[in-house]
Image (cartoon, rainbow, N blue to C red; front, side, top):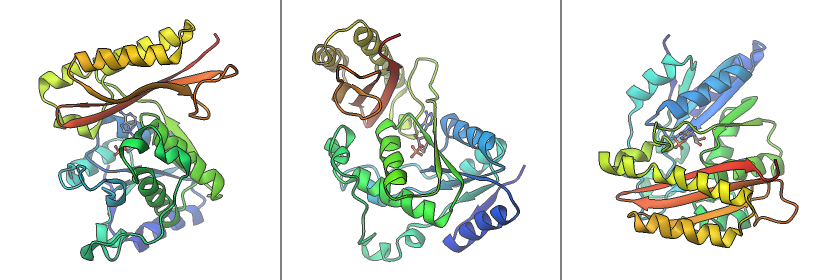
Amino acid sequence: MSIETLHTIAEARARVLQWQREGLKVALTPTMGNLHSGHASLVQLGLQHADRVIASVFVNPTQFGPNEDFDRYPRTLKADEDLLASVGCHAVFAPSAVEMYPDFASGKTNTLLIEPGPIAAELCGEFRPGHFAGVATVVAKLFNIMPADVAVFGEKDFQQLFVIRQLVRELNFPIKIIGAPTVREANGLAKSSRNQYLSAEEREQAGLIYQCLQSMREHCQAGRASSEIESTVHARLSERGFKPDYATVRDAHSLASLQAGSTHAVALIAARLGRARLIDNLSFALHA
Ligand code: AMP
């Protein structure tokens, strides 16, 4: 099956509106490209909820900090088109930075940014200032460009999914958000475009993150205090060569600290290993 690649905002909007005029339901799956089977699973989930799926491939400059990997982030559009076509995706929107941000060439992006509020300063936001404002802004732009019926995002980026649900609720976007389960390597490492910054040995080592998440779940369900769980995991990761940004257990619904009345929790880890910053999480019920 072939896929249609659209490079301009006008073409992408026209394609979505045309499908909808034909009575077809449309799903959108935003990505930054360098696609793997985790992204493919989002398309497959989109196909269960809609008649047409459009993916976007755009490395969004506004969500990268000045010393982050914007320039070296892998850009592999041809391979991405092939993977998307192989799982039945109908179209891909692959704009240039100038198409999305007309003054990009002179170093400018948006003047107006959507600020998600206090949640954007926590967890990943504490270590990546401005990141979630960049995400919220580009996702709002994509929703305006492609007014799809549903949009699929991975639970792997748990805090991002939280911010996007808040964006849709608070700014009244008429779009249904669907969360997709995390696709993992055999050793538990969550698939990520950034895994290619790891050596073969580091990839093996990185399976420890999922093991830590599982033990956080076990100890949390057994009633151990969050602070104890967090310091144990911090130490375990540090001993094995990781530089943890955070390892924490939160309420899965609010992302606040666990309360006596919490019913679902999420264990979240962000840690650097070699040249990569890896994030992962595991959510679970507290009282079986
Ligand atoms: P990215 O290209 O990394 O910005 O990710 C694009 C979308 O794919 C986001 O909604 C991610 O949460 C999702 N995603 C990334 N990795 C995975 C994975 N291993 N499993 C499921 N979804 C993923």
